[in-house]
Image (tube, rainbow, N blue to C red; front, side, top):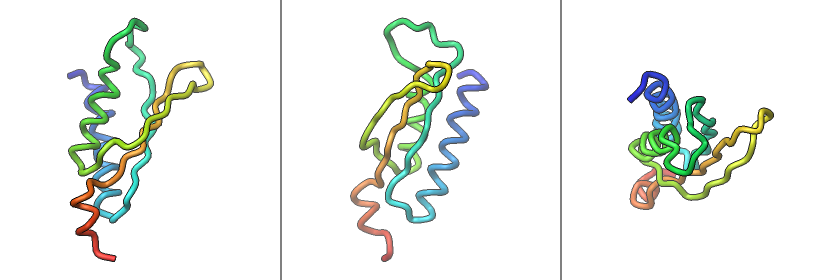
Length: 92
């Protein structure tokens, strides 16, 4: 994995872990378009890697939206929820 991809995944994973440790029930992220994407159909690897990192921190992808930034590049806005069995164990 490239340095930039790994750095982006590490950053969002750290934020997701912190939100989970703080007892939050939702985690909303913004995933920007990779600069090196080929614009053909296929996987957006940066996004897949970041989603995997967030889910490893205890979250499950719930909703998904994509919009364009001011340069007309796609940005993803995934919303994650705590896993059900973990949400039940969070003290009130």
